[in-house]
Length: 430
Image (cartoon, rainbow, N blue to C red; front, side, top):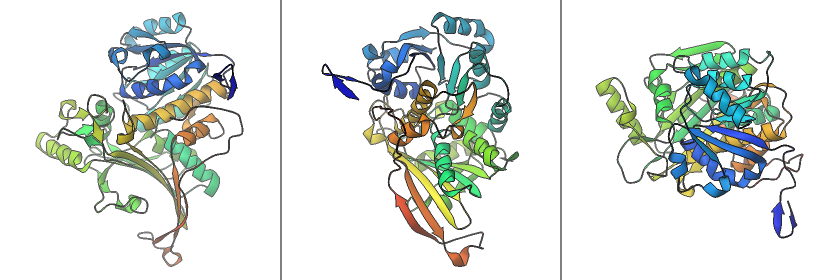
């Protein structure tokens, strides 16, 4: 940036400003995105917010004047209101839709793309289809003709974590297995009640409604019935080299979008283990044992707005090779963010990375997952705004052939990945 007439003027700006529509604008991720969008507001022309609830206009943590948005108080059921939705796109000349809802993803994408408008989401949602079915569906569209460029699953996990995988693969080659893991120790400060830091609906879908699962390789899905809650795995084996605890939690074995898409791309096994605060897990197991189900009313949303929370969300990925194991790890603390929580902040970094990729990179019309965007702005913004650590462990040569326990010795450690940018892309740090 350079100084002129005592005002800071960005030296890197889009050729044409984008008209942005945010769906689900009263949700937690949207609030985190909007809290930081003020720093990038000059990149956008019109900002349209849409939600069936109007919490966004009441949020005291947002700079409403600087955001300068138009709010549409509307519920968009695309199967019933596609005409209404398309009229909104046309009326406001929308060029990019950011879908932060838990509505069925693919019908929204299809309606958006029909209008020649780009689409971004942070996850694939559907009330009937499984995650693997949804990812396979998106991948089947890659070779078809498209009217715009769209990015799927651009959050934290799915999202940023597969850019870490790409970083590792570019540096070390394709591993023999990829293990994603997350330990969210977030909990309410003043209340002894089970809480979750993201969508209560989607948490219950992943943990209790849908089967658990993992990828054994390309086109090889292993489903774990009846659900991920009943298929837990102790995380010591994967977390202990980089996270030190007296006791390690049991993680849900959840089949996530990032597992399916990365397994399809590289034909490697991939799984995801997700653990929550021990007391929350204990309460949920007791409820499940008693009622054989868990409902939304059993949980509170720890958004760090209406309810203050503490703890941290630690997310990592391990790339396992015959003679070494490489880790990438990011930890975000709830105690250092205001008006949102650590989980939402991590997702917001993925959202901005995708937004800037569509604005500044000349992507051809088509569908993309994050791992397809290695040579774009995505990785630069993401690594600039997340402190991602890299650990490289060598395996004990005497135990290389042992498929069970291998002694790991730390060979190198990078406390923060910093990339040398090839362009003059300037931005404020979150």
